[in-house]
Image (cartoon, rainbow over all chains, first blue to last red; front, top):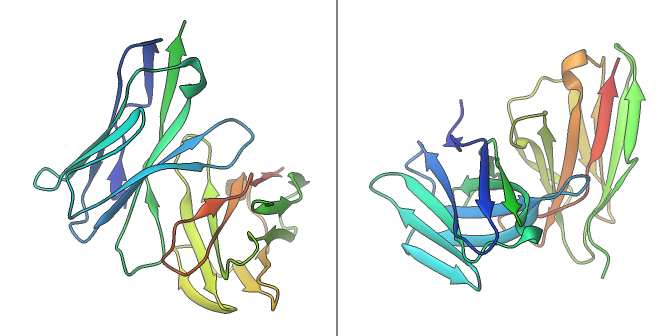
Length: 112
Length: 112
């Protein structure tokens, strides 16, 4: 039962432009959302998170938007840089729970 | 500070064998979680341990077991290996059960 879905397996963007990654969820109990970034041969590293009491969280070049009514969140990377080329995972949890539910990931390729 | 460490890095086993994977959490972290990432999918939750007690278990068969030691390190054991157990096994540590999870580099298990 896939409760978190990333429907775009890949995204190619030119350096300097915006990358927009999308994520949908089905479990209305989820109230904490995270984005992880993963390079080959490394574990996922935390990028940014958002609580359900907010609709936007910003950290430098990274902004996450949450639309609770649509059960949708997105990650914006502006401007995209070559080092951003990686797999990005969307994850969600219930705040008093212990586990993360992950999407399948989106592979981002930033072209020079 | 050292991050989450996992051993071994790679492992090749044959069907029916047993495997033990090891994880050392970040110093001061008392919770360890295990995730399985099959190629092309996101990480799937297997277990979480907090203060040496199992706090959660994902939808995995009884062939999978784990434990946490007094120093908060952890082992994941898989018996009677199947071809479908081939995956990247990720360990994550957090200060508390519900805290932000930091992932190790993973152990790549190949079952032939």
